[in-house]
Image (cartoon, rainbow, N blue to C red):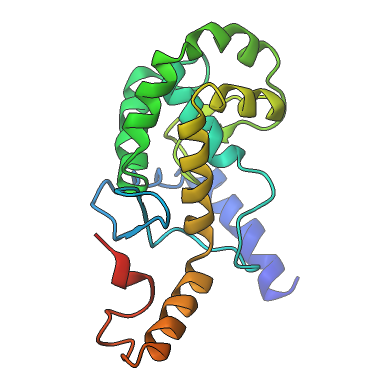
Length: 202
Protein backbone atom coordinates (compact mmCIF):
# COMPACT_ATOMS: atom_id res chain seq x y z
CA UNK A 1 0.00 0.00 0.00
CA UNK A 2 1.05 3.57 -0.60
CA UNK A 3 0.86 5.98 2.32
CA UNK A 4 -2.43 7.31 0.95
CA UNK A 5 -3.89 3.82 0.50
CA UNK A 6 -2.77 2.73 3.96
CA UNK A 7 -4.14 5.78 5.76
CA UNK A 8 -7.75 5.22 4.74
CA UNK A 9 -8.20 1.58 5.81
CA UNK A 10 -6.15 2.23 8.93
CA UNK A 11 -8.62 4.86 10.11
CA UNK A 12 -11.47 2.42 9.60
CA UNK A 13 -9.68 -0.36 11.51
CA UNK A 14 -8.97 1.88 14.48
CA UNK A 15 -12.67 2.73 14.70
CA UNK A 16 -13.60 -0.97 14.53
CA UNK A 17 -11.03 -2.06 17.12
CA UNK A 18 -11.54 0.70 19.67
CA UNK A 19 -15.24 1.24 19.09
CA UNK A 20 -14.59 4.96 18.90
CA UNK A 21 -16.72 6.74 16.34
CA UNK A 22 -15.82 10.07 14.73
CA UNK A 23 -17.02 13.07 16.68
CA UNK A 24 -20.29 14.52 15.32
CA UNK A 25 -19.83 17.62 13.17
CA UNK A 26 -20.10 20.98 14.88
CA UNK A 27 -23.40 22.76 14.21
CA UNK A 28 -23.22 25.48 11.56
CA UNK A 29 -22.65 28.97 12.89
CA UNK A 30 -25.56 31.38 13.29
CA UNK A 31 -23.25 34.38 13.55
CA UNK A 32 -24.07 37.44 11.41
CA UNK A 33 -22.54 37.26 7.93
CA UNK A 34 -21.11 40.09 5.78
CA UNK A 35 -23.69 41.40 3.34
CA UNK A 36 -23.88 43.18 0.01
CA UNK A 37 -26.75 44.90 -1.75
CA UNK A 38 -28.43 43.01 -4.59
CA UNK A 39 -28.47 45.37 -7.55
CA UNK A 40 -31.91 46.41 -8.70
CA UNK A 41 -33.68 45.52 -5.45
CA UNK A 42 -33.84 48.17 -2.75
CA UNK A 43 -33.18 46.74 0.70
CA UNK A 44 -32.38 43.24 -0.61
CA UNK A 45 -29.01 41.81 0.45
CA UNK A 46 -27.12 38.53 0.41
CA UNK A 47 -23.99 37.31 2.18
CA UNK A 48 -20.58 37.77 0.59
CA UNK A 49 -18.93 34.67 2.08
CA UNK A 50 -20.91 32.03 0.19
CA UNK A 51 -18.78 29.10 -1.09
CA UNK A 52 -17.80 29.82 -4.69
CA UNK A 53 -17.66 27.40 -7.59
CA UNK A 54 -14.59 27.14 -9.81
CA UNK A 55 -16.42 28.51 -12.84
CA UNK A 56 -17.42 31.63 -10.88
CA UNK A 57 -21.12 31.49 -11.65
CA UNK A 58 -24.26 29.82 -10.28
CA UNK A 59 -24.75 26.08 -10.83
CA UNK A 60 -27.25 24.99 -13.45
CA UNK A 61 -29.61 23.56 -10.82
CA UNK A 62 -30.69 25.50 -7.74
CA UNK A 63 -32.27 22.71 -5.67
CA UNK A 64 -29.74 23.26 -2.87
CA UNK A 65 -31.46 26.59 -2.15
CA UNK A 66 -34.95 26.18 -3.62
CA UNK A 67 -35.78 22.99 -1.71
CA UNK A 68 -34.81 24.25 1.77
CA UNK A 69 -36.91 27.37 1.16
CA UNK A 70 -39.91 25.28 0.16
CA UNK A 71 -39.38 22.98 3.15
CA UNK A 72 -39.27 25.94 5.54
CA UNK A 73 -42.60 27.06 4.11
CA UNK A 74 -44.15 23.59 4.29
CA UNK A 75 -43.09 22.70 7.84
CA UNK A 76 -41.70 19.46 9.25
CA UNK A 77 -41.42 16.47 6.90
CA UNK A 78 -41.41 12.95 8.30
CA UNK A 79 -38.04 11.15 8.04
CA UNK A 80 -36.40 14.35 6.81
CA UNK A 81 -36.68 17.37 9.11
CA UNK A 82 -38.28 18.26 12.42
CA UNK A 83 -39.80 21.54 13.57
CA UNK A 84 -36.67 22.20 15.64
CA UNK A 85 -34.39 21.58 12.67
CA UNK A 86 -36.51 23.88 10.53
CA UNK A 87 -36.29 26.61 13.14
CA UNK A 88 -32.51 26.33 13.18
CA UNK A 89 -32.38 26.24 9.37
CA UNK A 90 -34.48 29.39 9.11
CA UNK A 91 -32.02 31.23 11.34
CA UNK A 92 -29.05 29.97 9.32
CA UNK A 93 -30.59 30.90 5.99
CA UNK A 94 -31.69 34.29 7.31
CA UNK A 95 -28.06 35.06 8.13
CA UNK A 96 -27.12 34.28 4.52
CA UNK A 97 -30.22 35.74 2.89
CA UNK A 98 -32.02 38.16 5.23
CA UNK A 99 -35.17 38.10 3.09
CA UNK A 100 -35.59 34.37 3.80
CA UNK A 101 -38.22 34.70 6.60
CA UNK A 102 -40.27 37.08 4.44
CA UNK A 103 -40.11 34.67 1.49
CA UNK A 104 -41.26 31.81 3.72
CA UNK A 105 -44.22 33.86 5.00
CA UNK A 106 -45.19 34.92 1.47
CA UNK A 107 -45.13 31.35 0.18
CA UNK A 108 -47.28 30.23 3.10
CA UNK A 109 -49.77 33.02 2.46
CA UNK A 110 -49.88 31.99 -1.21
CA UNK A 111 -51.01 28.48 -0.30
CA UNK A 112 -47.85 26.40 -0.55
CA UNK A 113 -49.42 23.93 1.90
CA UNK A 114 -51.81 22.75 -0.81
CA UNK A 115 -48.77 21.47 -2.75
CA UNK A 116 -47.39 19.47 0.17
CA UNK A 117 -48.73 16.02 -0.66
CA UNK A 118 -47.87 16.20 -4.35
CA UNK A 119 -44.39 17.59 -3.73
CA UNK A 120 -43.49 14.80 -1.33
CA UNK A 121 -45.13 12.06 -3.40
CA UNK A 122 -43.21 12.99 -6.55
CA UNK A 123 -39.86 13.66 -4.84
CA UNK A 124 -37.02 11.38 -5.91
CA UNK A 125 -33.26 11.28 -5.90
CA UNK A 126 -30.80 12.28 -3.19
CA UNK A 127 -32.33 14.59 -0.56
CA UNK A 128 -30.87 18.06 -0.15
CA UNK A 129 -29.37 19.15 3.18
CA UNK A 130 -31.74 21.50 4.98
CA UNK A 131 -28.73 23.67 5.80
CA UNK A 132 -26.39 24.09 2.84
CA UNK A 133 -23.63 21.42 2.88
CA UNK A 134 -24.31 20.62 6.56
CA UNK A 135 -24.77 17.13 7.98
CA UNK A 136 -26.99 16.27 10.92
CA UNK A 137 -29.27 19.30 10.50
CA UNK A 138 -32.06 17.63 8.60
CA UNK A 139 -32.73 17.01 4.93
CA UNK A 140 -35.32 17.92 2.31
CA UNK A 141 -36.80 15.49 -0.21
CA UNK A 142 -35.52 16.27 -3.67
CA UNK A 143 -38.69 17.82 -5.03
CA UNK A 144 -39.27 17.56 -8.75
CA UNK A 145 -37.56 20.45 -10.55
CA UNK A 146 -40.65 21.55 -12.45
CA UNK A 147 -42.68 21.63 -9.26
CA UNK A 148 -40.03 23.65 -7.47
CA UNK A 149 -40.44 26.35 -10.11
CA UNK A 150 -44.24 26.18 -9.95
CA UNK A 151 -44.27 26.59 -6.18
CA UNK A 152 -41.88 29.55 -6.24
CA UNK A 153 -43.96 31.10 -9.01
CA UNK A 154 -46.87 31.32 -6.56
CA UNK A 155 -45.19 34.58 -5.53
CA UNK A 156 -43.41 36.09 -8.55
CA UNK A 157 -41.58 38.60 -6.35
CA UNK A 158 -40.06 35.78 -4.32
CA UNK A 159 -38.95 33.93 -7.44
CA UNK A 160 -37.40 37.06 -8.96
CA UNK A 161 -35.63 38.15 -5.78
CA UNK A 162 -34.33 34.65 -5.10
CA UNK A 163 -32.87 34.38 -8.60
CA UNK A 164 -31.11 37.72 -8.19
CA UNK A 165 -29.71 36.71 -4.80
CA UNK A 166 -28.44 33.39 -6.12
CA UNK A 167 -26.62 35.15 -8.93
CA UNK A 168 -24.91 37.42 -6.41
CA UNK A 169 -24.11 34.55 -4.03
CA UNK A 170 -22.18 32.64 -6.67
CA UNK A 171 -20.68 35.60 -8.55
CA UNK A 172 -18.61 37.28 -5.84
CA UNK A 173 -15.37 37.29 -7.83
CA UNK A 174 -16.95 38.82 -10.92
CA UNK A 175 -18.87 41.39 -8.88
CA UNK A 176 -15.75 42.29 -6.92
CA UNK A 177 -13.76 42.79 -10.11
CA UNK A 178 -16.55 44.90 -11.58
CA UNK A 179 -16.63 47.10 -8.50
CA UNK A 180 -12.86 47.59 -8.63
CA UNK A 181 -12.98 48.52 -12.33
CA UNK A 182 -15.73 51.05 -11.69
CA UNK A 183 -13.75 52.51 -8.82
CA UNK A 184 -10.66 52.93 -11.00
CA UNK A 185 -12.70 54.43 -13.83
CA UNK A 186 -14.23 57.03 -11.55
CA UNK A 187 -10.81 58.12 -10.33
CA UNK A 188 -11.11 56.58 -6.86
CA UNK A 189 -8.98 53.79 -5.48
CA UNK A 190 -10.50 50.48 -4.44
CA UNK A 191 -9.30 51.15 -0.92
CA UNK A 192 -11.31 54.35 -0.65
CA UNK A 193 -14.43 52.46 -1.71
CA UNK A 194 -13.96 49.63 0.76
CA UNK A 195 -12.76 47.17 -1.88
CA UNK A 196 -14.76 44.73 -3.99
CA UNK A 197 -18.11 43.46 -2.82
CA UNK A 198 -17.38 44.73 0.68
CA UNK A 199 -18.15 48.25 -0.52
CA UNK A 200 -21.79 47.28 -0.72
CA UNK A 201 -21.93 45.37 2.56
CA UNK A 202 -24.61 46.39 5.01
